Image (tube, rainbow, N blue to C red; front, side, top):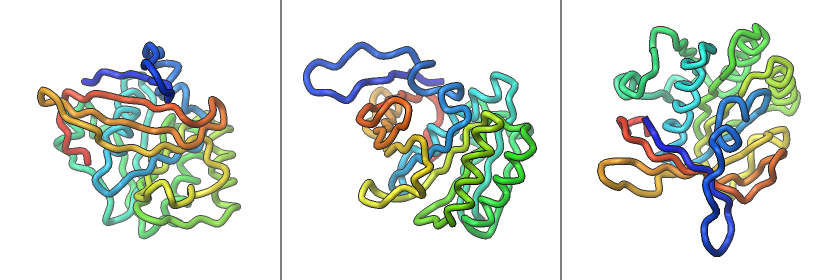
Amino acid sequence: MSERHALAHASGPAPAPAPVIEAWSLERFAGRLLEWSGAASSAALTLAFGLVHEAQRRGEPAVWIGGLASGFYPPDVAAAGIDLAAFPVIRTQDALSAARAADLVLRSGAFALVVLDLGADPRFPIPVLTRLAGLAHRHRAALLCLTVKDDAHPSIGALVSLRARVARVGREDGRLRVEARVLKDKRRGPGWRYEEVFRGPDGLR
């Protein structure tokens, strides 16, 4: 379980939290190519599984695609409310193979959320990203790419609709606070941030 808040990035007093449906939800990300970046110990996985949980609550399929060295801790995922039996995981050799798998998955039109766990410095030819972004838009699927990098490194491509830097920003009363700072958002504009306080297991990275 978690508490969600969307906060504008501005000086002075913090504004009132925006409704979650307007800030950070599967519906908001439908049809978009997303990139969430962070250090190796970032909380990008934690926020990603928030979307997986939302998809499953809505009865919408989600799939995880990642390399042999990437992954997550299944007991924590299950404890956070994810039905692992209804959550397919595809293992690939490299980022390009993961992109090809995502292409096939998106073409099926069956998945509301496709997560690509890409690791550090993934490289894609422009036609590959163009095709993936087009398929996500056509089937109204959220295509979420998780990468390990800092803000100085460029995005995986210009077709990314929203890029966020995700990190843990504190711990209080046994709860974990996660923040996503939006560096690029083609619909709303950059410079805003989102926070979520998790009450459940925090071993998701």
